Image 1: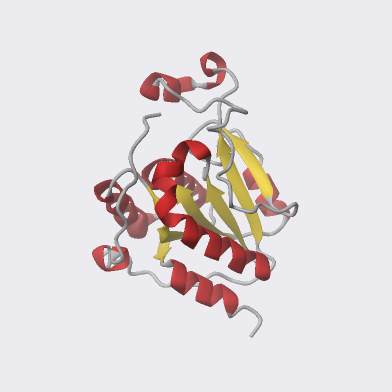
Image 2 (image 1 turned 90 degrees about the horizontal axis):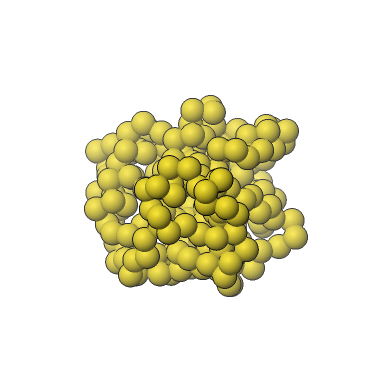
Length: 209
């Protein structure tokens, strides 16, 4: 995968996608899980602008007992498990390398789950769906990187698996604003409720009140 410089963050993503983000819903207590997608050292330049928001959401979810799942992308043998990703990008994240490690400071806890994957979707070739259904999880909150690749593909896949999806506009990031906003529009149109960190945290914190 190509390496990029740090993208710029905008504060008006919800305004930019307002024409498509017309369906209203709020996450339900006890029915949702948080997916933190690929917040790894490899993606640090892209992820840096959203780390604060990511941490706020993780902390809010933990405080209310919402399951936190970190995905970690990596390849043990590109010739065997690289597939089209290897042909497309050439350079992939090597399993157990420094790039593969989660970004320092995410403060992963023993109660959190780490899900290893080797495709864009966190559902492909993993036990994610079975794990969620065994806990009666019906909704998924998605944050992390990259908006238009692993995050969007996972969101679409979650929708196809009949989960209600909440996608956080300012706790996800990619290489530039065009791709980020384009993905948010696509997701709002057909796959996910796109929300802000502030609104999501406020709703989570209200659970049980």
